[in-house]
Image 1 (cartoon, chains in turn red, yellow):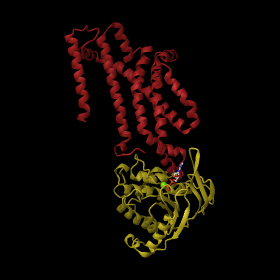
Image 2: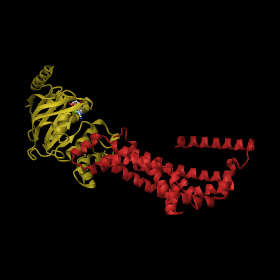
Image 3: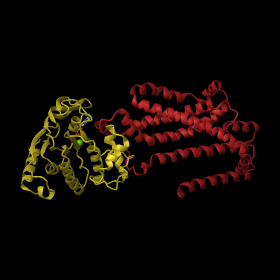
Image 4: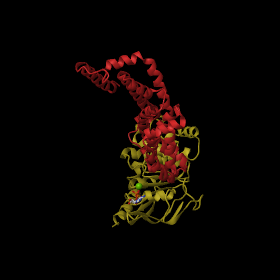
Length: 252
Length: 250
Ligand SMILES: Nc1ncnc2c1ncn2[C@@H]1O[C@H](COP(=O)(O)OP(=O)(O)O)[C@@H](O)[C@H]1O
Ligand SMILES: [Mg+2]
């Protein structure tokens, strides 16, 4: 534990220290680059605002992430079970990722108004793709000999999917989930930039317009912290769901 | 089970490679039958055909209960790799075959648990495959197949990767188990001693294209004891005939 937590903390402290020293020694304008101490003071002084808007972003993000993951899993399983669907749908799924999200987001606001929905849809649009791809790849990577064995036992395609393909795809699916989680932070903020009345993305726009650079940095800090916690939360869930990973010398 | 003139070839790029050719074989009920042959002679190919995972190009395979009907799901099959699922513990892995047959998860598990002692897995029910020795992994894989309760069980080089001492004790254990439950066993190996020690009948396969070139009745008395059997004169006479036939191959 110590060896995993200490080095990044030390590195972070070093960089923050250097930043603080640079701003003070070179006498940089606080509007251009506030020192970390000013950002921290701003954060502490306005905790209420950050909590309120942070929770708004968090709920958009979690709703969108949950929908995106469910859609991604369903698409992945369907593509693996039905060859024809996979061939027909794959290029279109790739196409959805080529559409710039900032271009789509205003249309979503037009459709759904200044509610949670357009942000959740933005998040879901961004994070279903890595989940779908990692699910298809993971399900396809199951040892074909294991499938033959189960067919010799008389197993149905669905039983093979449930008992063999899906569990063996778990590690890959979780890689996809981690990518999706990282993307969904970006997705929520982009969704808020286009049209919102609260959230960390909204807050960033406000601070930018008012020239409160320290507030802007404080918002980014909160957003980053939230993203990191969520990202490692996925890893923690993975450890809880796949306890056998510790014992698996080989991957099947 | 009776096998008549079965052939199977595979495409290898543009060429077609004959893996097994015109194989005739009878597997009498309740007998321990072994196919022995050098690697890549088509032993696994034959087993795949016999358990319905693959279809022959020509020839027929008949079982007393099914006629020439579908074999898939009716023959106990233990592949060359143990194929244990790293995400299931020992009892869960042993239950896989039953679950595939439609037995509920809990029920399958408790039936698997009832055989742990007989298969030397007592105390390891909750262990994961990554924590087991090679011999124990093979026993889990074998239990998984035997639990399905098939009249015919086909084992593909089950002891091939074990060290000599473990293999000897597993052979003795398997004979014991077979004499207790009296199912039909079709055993595949590349080890002549193993084939003779275990079997009622040994079929020798030639190198590619695989075909059965010699069939021997092994009328050594049972129960057999490894140290006595492998040093006895009848055993060595049979072994000499197999080796001589092998040496005759081009
Ligand atoms: N699915 C396959 N496709 C192409 N060639 C195969 C296939 N299965 C087996 N063969 C070939 O058939 C021959 C017999 O293989 P196999 O039955 O696995 O031999 P054994 O089990 O006796 O070692 C080998 O030369 C192998 O390369
Ligand atoms: Mg083989």
